[in-house]
Picture (tube, rainbow, N blue to C red):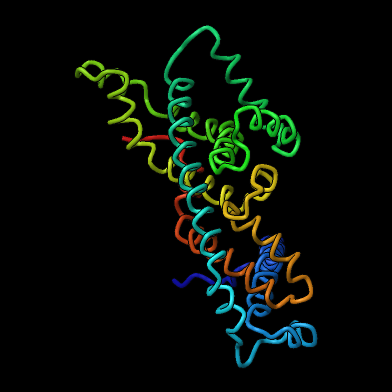
Length: 285
């Protein structure tokens, strides 16, 4: 006996839902990538081509702007300063946030809720609000016109959010694992260094990646702290370069594109670590 053939039912609601989702995602992709593509196109054009044909693919591409920028020693100096600030700020954030998150997640003390609330409140105050008091504090500490002033401010204003990220991951690690480590003779620091940090590698990678991107793109802090041209970072140099070549939009596009290349490359490699670190919430075993 053969069963009657039944055609699959057309799910209109599912089709409309998928259509809306893909439409919204396509719109987001266009919004994100069109400015980037236009920036690259502009960097490979002459000034006249940029003004007359801004939306046309550069054929043939003009490499004069990029070669001119790469031939300037000031660009490499700003690149070095940005790298120094980014690496130092990331190392400081990882060190302080991992220690603080370990204390808040695995230890109990009377004033613990107060400190957690203070760090939570810190998320509500962006650096724009506190930049003037920060400037006065740095001036009292003789940190103006020094890269260490930029580094310390970047570390301070990235503590709250990253501590919360690491605290959530550390809290999810089973307490039985900590008890077993203590029974085997581990000290508190041994458990933190040898067991907790290796298990928290995805979360640490996410914190490091986010800190690097924020530090690399930071303009406000170097703008307030740094006056010496030899200590300019790339975002600050981009602003000054735009003021110098205000009429040559092709040259400005080339400078901005070269400044953004390290961030784009780094994000492409770190995107998986960021997603896995922010979504990981438990240790299974």
